[in-house]
Length: 410
Image (cartoon, rainbow, N blue to C red; front, side, top):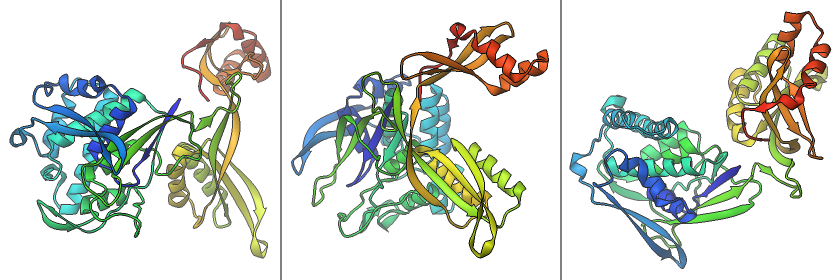
């Protein structure tokens, strides 16, 4: 169970991400194979140089040998081309999602239909190579979550195919607004374009949260150097973190895990019971681990309802939106909380009632227990005229027949 933390304090671009993944240890063959499989292997080459920026070593990546005039530039052309590729569905979807994010941002900025979008600034095939290689690296590492620091806004004026534009360029601003990404700014940041559209689109799609992890148990890191000369070191680093979301605090047997969660809570006095019930259902659908409510007495003696949701950090933003979109509250309290959890996995037990879906739990002493799914207990109870307790006792007596259908998780 690995987590990635992408620290882009001085900037982010597609080539910097790619270089950092290579420096992290992702094999070159892994990132080039998807392009070779579609016949692009002979039309370009990746030059990987080791270098320094203000004394900080890292890698730089250069894409060489492309014939830009022959490359597709319309979003529709690129989408059709990618959809025909014989890649794994997860890789194809990641690449398409990044291009869709870029295309929709370009469409909005220029006020044109999506099908007429041209990727002038992105160099289309350059961007395709960077996007595919970065997505392939993420597929290879298969992290449980990706954190990213807030990308810097940058400042100043740059020359583009649309003339002189202020930094951050309009497409970067549109992506930040669409995906609710807070850009970092201030006098402590250097002048110039620090965040590119390709770099931000990749993080908008791939990152689960724009924040620094609460704890970093570092396993490895890679550094990708930028090509622009700044008044300081210009690099991006990717940290590979071991079980960040579930820091193992019991190294002797690795059974107990500490999990950092987000507690979201509000008190409501202007909603009907039906409204509260609907809100709770929506919070659970959005990814809350659990939602509880209780009566509270608020100011001026008003009776209200306290609604509280416990959420994994990578789902916190999605659940946060539900409070304000589906509820009547105009404020939300948040705190970091934690819990100890046991390893568990889903599977089936063979019983006189047939195969029954169960969850197997590993206790701190190493013993294994099973817990039948409640829906299964109800089904068997109704079909056989037995009480839930009778069914539960019968099913759990066949715990040794448990066959897992997934790996252990927390």
